[in-house]
Length: 240
Image (cartoon, rainbow, N blue to C red; front, side, top):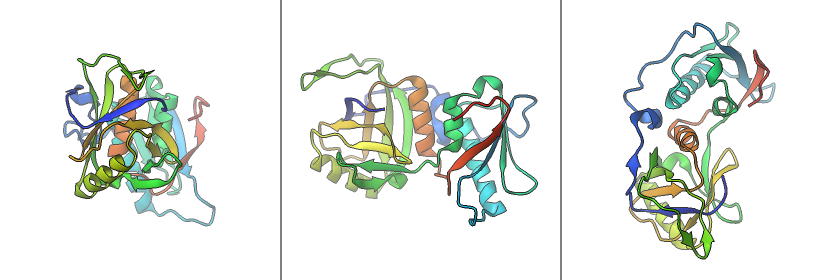
């Protein structure tokens, strides 16, 4: 999601409910194992034919997909590895079988921060948490003569010590410029840096919806997959 987005270090936002807190929410420890009914989606590793994916890796992938779905507050689902140990079967309630959910299932989930010319500055492994939030006191304003489209929804990022130091360097170097937060090479947000961020905490604010900040936070919080997945069969014929 491109556009004028402000990154600031002050954490003045009011958090959304626990249901929106992504993969680190301890309340979401259950794993749905059986869905009574719903749409079936068959996934397989999107790799070259000579690459063999073992059962252990598929089971790790299964766990990550379950965590992603729970992070989106989807509970009545099932994820299983097929008998041949080559595919994953996901059953979702029809109401939750959306392009956003399918994108969540197929995304490899590698996060990077990039310069205005596309150079990778650091990766998402230095992020310790991404939390969807809302600032109920925020009012739309103008910066540098340009109106910033915002509605109060934002993402709170926190970095480990390595990330804190690196992000401080990046925000000092790219003052008044956009840096892109990307996932699998696609831009999630292109915030403009208005101040160096040296405390290891940042807000990403922009033209987001509640669904946007929940989905992005969930993907950032979850481990990336070892490989991308593709949909090879589904009941509804929908595409991710």
